[in-house]
Image (cartoon, rainbow, N blue to C red; front, side, top):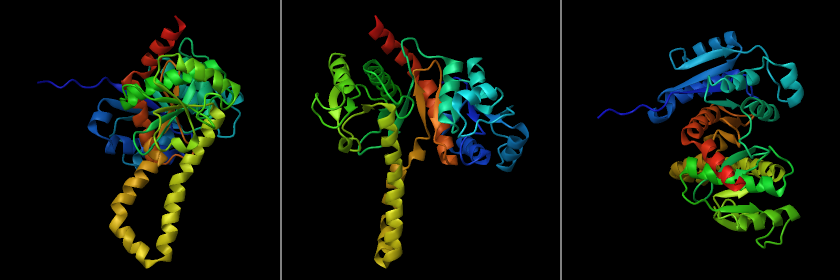
Length: 345
């Protein structure tokens, strides 16, 4: 019996974006090629975008010259503090815009950047365009819980949202949860200050009624203490609230790890206990570590755009590339297109 190889995929990675420099980005894509399962890396090529000479040296130093990694030269870099619109105009040969242009031409099937989030969103919109019926894309973050991971959107792309945008976030989050996490009928909730339908801003009350009548598996409102308990599979909120939630969660791992370290320094019994429990602590750390999920996709685009954290480690970059491959292979964009089309007819 002949096993059919997966469809060839090329993922572009902005090698110049992020706080930690190109060496971390290169290290991350090398880790992807070497350490990820064959089912993930089969027929996948990585295209690093940035300064050709620098990336060639870093790739050689990382012993990645023989791996399926190519380089696309870009002479400019969009800095983290650049104004997105101005940077896109003044830096047409930036690594981010070159990368977006490659996907627009169909030369790559997805892209990843740990650079300026606003510029990444603007470049993605310019190159890929929105799915018909989607006024604004949303950033969908994955957060681990006591049970399955949950999807939270938006986490930063849209500071203020109207009821139609929030409703579409629910549709897109459901499609993402189904396609990527394999949840047949995702439970959807609105993040709010109480469970009652009359709680929260007027826009939340309006979209609550829309979701009740939508046919989605809508459970109502969820409060902050229900998120990590896994009371929903998809949580909908505006980007201002979602970004605060995401950054708060990301600090939990540091709090837990730092507290354990201090306790072990204080007591010999704690150190002995750690030796007995280190496997369990390792598993807990793995669940809490945001680098395990790598990056967050922009939902609602005609393509694949993964936004990684500015402070991404090599591990986070590796997993952001995994996220890009999974997103493309799962057909999330097609599923979103179908859901949005259904609501427009």
